[in-house]
View 1 (tube, rainbow, N blue to C red):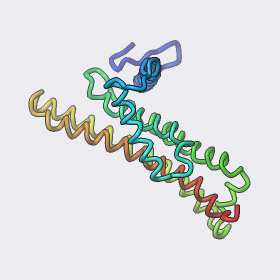
View 2: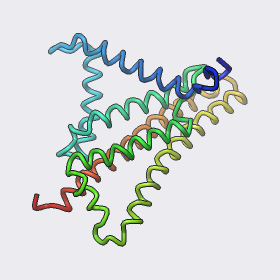
View 3: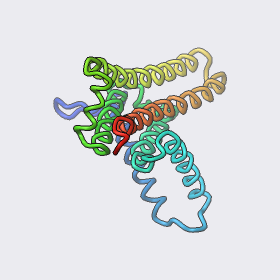
Length: 222
């Protein structure tokens, strides 16, 4: 294991971003398992906070996709929570946000890309789903395809660029000003990390809702 806590096994190298990502996933699963073992009608303070958080997420999703909000909530809620933790974990000394790695943000963007089509096909069937790419005229098919690819690329690069710049800025300020001056910068780091998680999740939600609702608009008689 080297300085960035990567692991090399023969010719296979598991980089720090992957290790951190799996660590976040395991911690997330463990926390979810522990907090759902003893749910009560009269909630504890922790249960109250968790329920309030999920209430906010649910309301945000239902606002964008009222008819299919509960269908896509598990995916969007998990994505939001993961991004918040991943963006903020770089504040822990010795750790780096996995979202500062372009390969991680590309994987997340690809996951959103595949989920959009999966939910669209699941809702309307693959024939009716693919048909909307031919509307209002088949001539626009190449432009629809380019739009799908470019917005996926933009998702990956936007998150990567913002988190990378945040960590670099924090590191440079620490080197120049020491550990006292960066406190306001630390607060800005937290705010920006939360904003970037929200933007990524909201864009994913809009893409999913658009894929589902476009089918209903294309076939109002059904």
